[in-house]
Length: 213
Image (cartoon, rainbow, N blue to C red; front, top):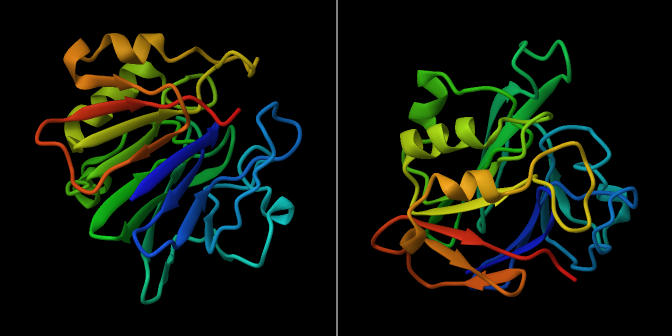
């Protein structure tokens, strides 16, 4: 399996049989590169411009934007309805956590989660292998809350997202605070945007990818 970070909350997951799943595509208002991949599936956690730009993608992907999810011979996607804020959606509306089962891995993309998770939702996420989690605060959970969720879910691989980068000037924090909560030996920093693996690590790893340049 390969996972590539385009930037913000948009990852491309490529399975061993070359099926491509894209999460939360952004539009031209973000400074990240235009997404040029041609995905087979796209998940949209909520309808904000930096997460729902499906119309800019190539091809005719299967778009998954409801908590009812989707399933075929390649993937199974299940949604958990949560909120974009800590006021039950009064500030920024709803958000969907997508649980993607494919290639023998269970992946959770938390979208723009804005609050701590309750016991029921945590229970639905208890067997997650790979966690894609926002850490920048303000519009989403901050680094401390993100680490608390990581500790409760205990995935094998953690991929932070939705934080301030060298080219994104949103009023959110960078990734450094989130990294500070982890032991140095558990962090792997990549020069590029992509990681490839054919098995999970024995101990939890945080993969810090660079966005596509």
